[in-house]
Amino acid sequence: MSRLKDLKTPVFWAEGHPGKLDRESWIVSVDGFCKNPKIFTWQDIVSIPKTIVDARLTSVTRFSVRGKWGGIKISDVLDAVEAHDEARYVRFWSVRNIYDTSIPIDVVRKEKTILAYEFDGEYLEEDYGGPIRGFCPYLWGYKSAKSVVKIELMDRYVSGFWELRGYPDDALITKGRVHDLNQGGRIRYIPDGEVTTFIDE
Image 1 (cartoon, rainbow, N blue to C red):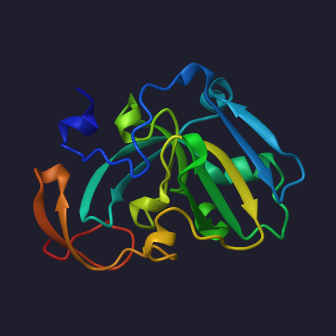
Image 2 (cartoon, helix red, strand yellow):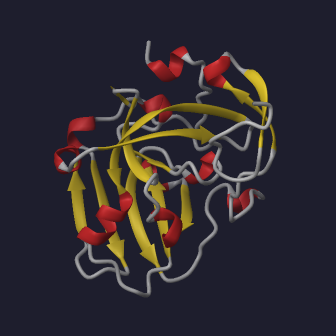
């Protein structure tokens, strides 16, 4: 059993679970408003120095789970493809190109926004967005796209899968109750913004 399963993290694929995915042959293409579009293989990604982010994934459905997410900074990816100044948003596509979501480039460049392939030292399984998923603790979890296969640098914002279905485009985390999965689902209260503390502490 994986650590995320052990914490009873919900498994949720709005577009349907993709089933078993081949980590070793995984690729992420990066294109759009950049000078040097690239295709990153799984081997490319794991060869880049790993960044470990101790942070929370917080869902708009009001659960929050903390752990050490391992992966690579998306800012490093943007630098590798030489993002143009006109690039204002980064659009992430999940496997099968059904699910997409976009994040402002200044949020993508923050130090905790990564392409994650580990949680607490374990490779991410498909249930939780493996082999490689976006991870952005600054926004609600629907901005952390699972099983990413494509990244587009855009000069404008495009509403994604959930945003077209009524979720806020800015995805700013708002204060209220959440179930803290690290505390067995205990109900706790969060302030606005990235969840780093609880109001009830």
